[in-house]
Image 1 (cartoon, one colour):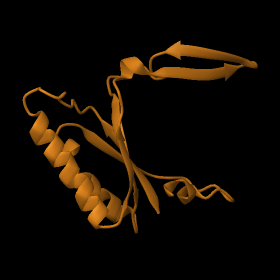
Image 2: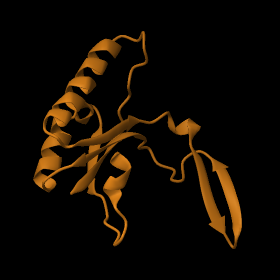
Image 3: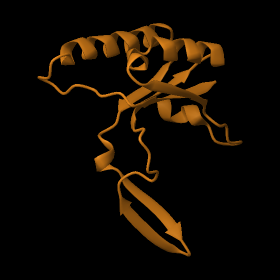
Image 4: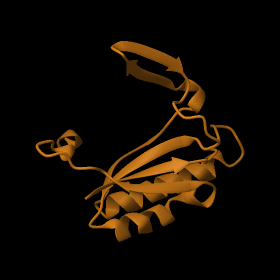
Length: 123
C-alpha cells in the first residue's frame, strides 16, 4: 500500500549553514535505509511556502493567488511516498525520519482510484 509522509515545520539548513552537512547525511541515510527495505517510491523537499501559488475555479473562472491555500502556522516542507506492507511499517519509517525530531510527520495512505494505476509513474 502506498503511504505519503508529509513533513511539517522542519527548518532545513541551506548549503554553507552550520549543520547543513550533518542534516544532509542524516536525510541521505534515511533514504538509503528506505531503499534498502524496498519501500522508497519518491521523496522531495519543497521550496518555502512563499513560492506557492494556489489555483481555484469558482463559477467557471480560474483564480490564481500567491501563497498557500490555508493560512496556518504549520508549513509543509516536503514529502516522501513509500510502498509499505501496512500502516505499522509506514509509522515505523516516519519515526526513523530525521525531520521527526524537529517537526512532525503526517502519515496518510494514498487513496486508490478504480482503474487508475498509481504505480505506473514509478517507471
